[in-house]
Image 1 (tube, one colour):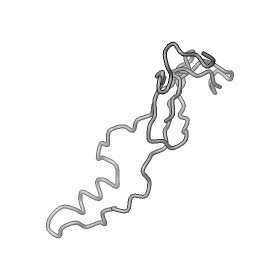
Image 2 (cartoon, helix red, strand yellow; image 1 turned 180 degrees about the horizontal axis):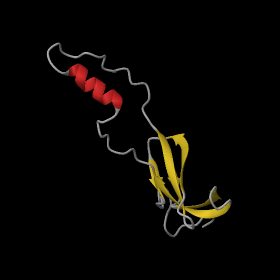
Image 3 (cartoon, helix red, strand yellow; image 1 turned 90 degrees about the horizontal axis):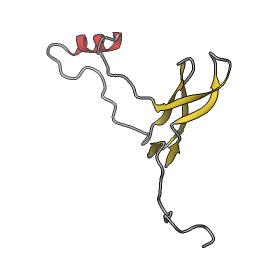
Length: 107
C-alpha cells in the first residue's frame, strides 16, 4: 500500500527552483476512436468475414505503474512522475491501521 501526501515540495522546471506542488493521480483520457489505427481497424472489420485481427488474451501484468501529476502552485506548470507498481494507492489519507488512538509507544 502506497500513501502519498497531497502536496510535495519539489523542483519546478519553469520556476527553476523548488516550489510546493499539488499532487494528483494521472488518469488516461477517453478514447475518441479517431486515431489512425482505430479507423483502419473499423474499416477492416466492416462487412462479412468475422474477426479480422488477433484478439490479445495473454495478459502478463496484474498492476499498472502509478503516475503522479504534479502541478506547481506558483506557475501552474504540470509534469508527470511515474512511481512503482502497486495494487493499493492512496493520496493524502491518514491510515490508522494498527494504531490505537490513545496508546503511545512507551505506555
